[in-house]
Length: 380
Ligand SMILES: Cc1cc2nc3c(=O)[nH]c(=O)nc-3n(C[C@H](O)[C@H](O)[C@H](O)COP(=O)(O)OP(=O)(O)OC[C@H]3O[C@@H](n4cnc5c(N)ncnc54)[C@H](O)[C@@H]3O)c2cc1C
Image 1 (cartoon, rainbow, N blue to C red):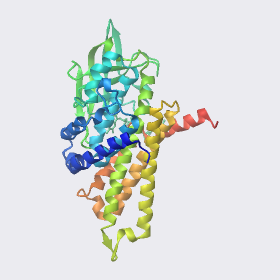
Image 2 (cartoon, helix red, strand yellow):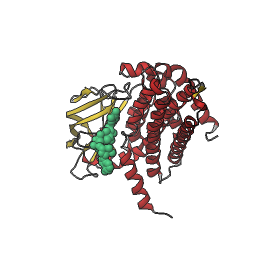
Image 3 (cartoon, helix red, strand yellow):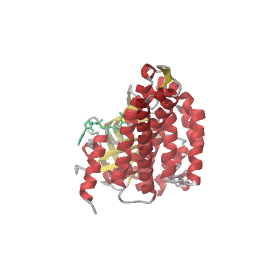
Image 4 (cartoon, rainbow, N blue to C red):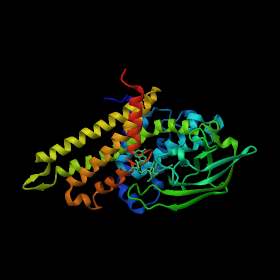
């Protein structure tokens, strides 16, 4: 038993809600390819958008362990729905790390209560893995800034009311980066095409154009030039959340698969009687369990403000998402032909799993980070 009574209570509530109100509609959400507003309302009504946010800003004031455990439950039911949870956490994080009191009250509270969605615009067509290569500019004019640029692959773009953008305020590579918050409806904030995706199809992804967007300097989050540092701290908090999402997707596929192989008969035996199938089941279960433990460890390190979080946040995200891809692929395999058919959920789960190896830093980038941390620290 790893969780405290309070953490366990929160997770059990999430589990019941996810099973009863979210899982039955996951196929529908995938097919429609639209934001599942009904599901998001359920998350909001139960306070899931602000679990780890302090109470004074509309959250539940619980810890990161509770937060990641809830994300796993929602992702096990519907990955698309869980993306709004993780993206909200991503957008809230820079405010909690570096925002002013006024910014926290104005922007964090409506996101933590789930009244509105938030989006985070980092990626550009020529700057994905290399965030410091971004070209979007924020030029100071009096007490305002003028923003120009083009962001791609932004989750919930057009659906959200609050947007955080990573911009360049000087030519210095990492020290020239600054963050700004912009509200929907601001002149020059233009939403581009909606992407047709392989998975998480119930999560909307769009381009954003910033065309002479004028914002007051009070919309800057943190100091000028501090954006890259804030962003790296944001990722330390949000990569374990993506790890939790991946663990949930893997677990959802494993549980479905286990029930299936205990019913399906071939050669006058149920599939689970074959040793080769048992071996696959054991590997899948071990890996889901190991993913959860890595995610929980990273969450505990965040709760304890452990300065060694960088490598562990990357390990949790990288391992859990590789496991999600492997376990969902094996779940499809163990369902045979049915696994490949849309009437069975593992096909969707396999498509949903893939993105967790790509966003919030690809798994190659996570391995670079882990190795750099290991080399920098050595063995003490
Ligand atoms: C569905 C979806 C939702 C997204 N949501 C958001 C969002 O809300 N906000 C946002 O800002 N972005 C978002 N992204 C963007 C996502 O974070 C990037 O796609 C991701 O970081 C990879 O960047 P890239 O696509 O430019 O790939 P590239 O950086 O071009 O990488 C291509 C390949 O090269 C590898 N590679 C690159 N550099 C190295 C290196 N140094 N060492 C080894 N391998 C390397 C990569 O691992 C990858 O395999 C989203 C993307 C998708 C698909």
